[in-house]
Length: 126
Image (cartoon, rainbow, N blue to C red):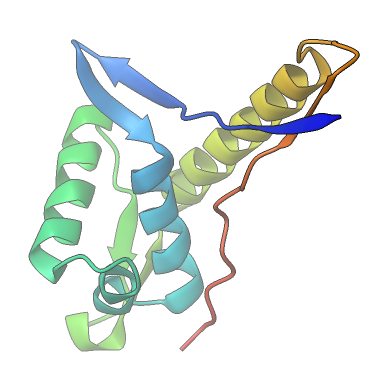
């Protein structure tokens, strides 16, 4: 029997532009777990400037602050309550869609569909 892996890529759009997706949510996750935008950007092989720009564009589009600094920039940053809520809600939605899609995968006698790689690495706090 052949085993095929299912892969999904989900994002939300507004005015034909990507609003929230797996990349920005992963950046939020790493900021939250590492306590630093710089470390989160480095772990994703992004420049600090690119990561900061992505967060600022997302905050402007949503009209909320996603990241807050802990005192000075050198002390790091964390997610705002709204940022954490956005990250968690997206991840819960993504998992619900993945579960639904896998449970409704084609049923064929010669094919078994399994979950593909799920990119949710556990970043360590610095």
